[in-house]
Image (cartoon, rainbow, N blue to C red):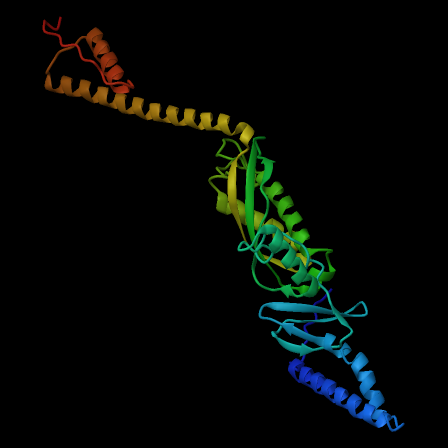
Amino acid sequence: MKEIELKQPKNGLLVLCLLVALYFGAVAGCIFGGIKADDGTVTWWFILSLVWLCIGWVPAFGLKIVGPQEAIVLTLFGKYIGTIKESGFYFVNPFCATVNPAAKTRLNQSGDVDSSKPAILSRDLLQQQNTLSKKISLKAMTLNNSRQKINDCLGNPVEIGIAVIWRVVDTAKAVFEVDNFKEYLSLQCDSAVRNIVRLYPYDVAPGIDTTGDGIADEGSLRGSSEVVAGRIRDEIQAKVAGAGLEIQEARITYLAYAPEIAAVMLQRQQASAIIDARKMIVDGAVGMVEMALERLSENHTVELDEERKAAMVSNLLVVLCGNRDAQPVVNSGSLY
């Protein structure tokens, strides 16, 4: 369905003043008509005044206030007639109904949660407000979707949460193409996160193709968060475009191993760090031993046979690679 933007004249204030004046006139007409009725004469304007007092409130339903970055979708007896997006005070057909199927939907997002008040009280107040107001917000809103437990490409369960910045760009599609555009967006966010996360390992793993080009790469959830968030955004946008929604940005707000394997993975990371540190220490120790032997040979400081060189290398490696400070033994006798 194509959106029709109405360019209504902002005549709401004029109509309101006219309605108030007519009501005052009707009250005055009833008063003076009652005086005439005492003489046995019923005037036509007395009858009109009574009729207006009974049904004069009906045109008031046509008064609509539209704030900045808000829109109202109007239907007349079930037929879509257009959308008013420009802020102002309007008068429309009083039999037109404003439609917003997502007005009562509560999601963990901006515009639906008021942190300054208790949760139960805030929810009740917002529900009462949305019961009376069917306006659709055109502002950029932030949806904090609930954390999900998903298996990565290696089968490890991870927990991930995302924040999606979105806005309504086509009110007709948002209202009429889907049953509830807020719930539809939340469901598509869950689906997109699952589809993308299962393509990546949590940490860089060898032989994993995350781009689908058949070549192994170093993509991971932890190291390529910007790329992963971009793919999630594109996935969501492709799914909600038909609902008149625009996804401006998606960000990963929480990422961690699931609790059942978090301790094991921490030990694995610690072991990898210890191994890497040991490799660096051994490489440095071997270089220092080689440098010591070369310097002794160049300066002819001490002539060592192969057996003595092996003993010296062993002692130096023990001293340089050990976790504790060495306890030297002083040789006060001959070298041999």
